[in-house]
Length: 134
Image 1 (cartoon, rainbow, N blue to C red):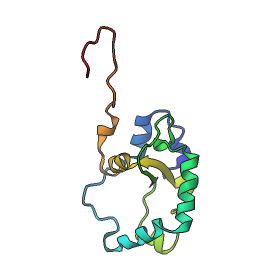
Image 2: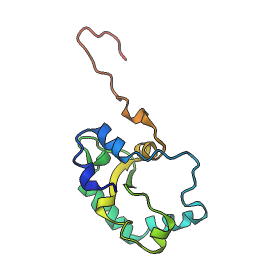
Image 3: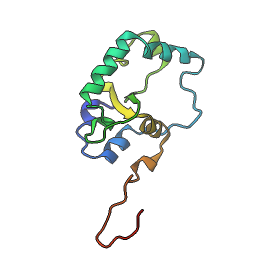
Image 4: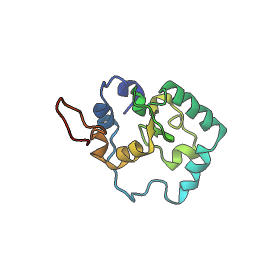
């Protein structure tokens, strides 16, 4: 079982990403016709309070790893994926601080669908005598 406590012991972005990696397929059915369940849940006052507290805990950083601040919409990723029954039965899995971490939309999709391009460096390392602009 994946946990937040274990995740934050991993020192690098890549290690944390690989720990979270699910590797599903695009178009794979998750909630199907029950999609309304998670949408209702994610708009509840309880979830909104929990989400705010988790963003504060993670300092608004990707996978709780400073200085990787998220400058777009923050998503709380469930380390152990939730299912319709979790919402119907309001299991502890939904709002367990050990089961969520902050991620960006791009990273969330990469975790779910195995997009390793998020590991590519965003900036090129500059070297002495490097005359190329990029």
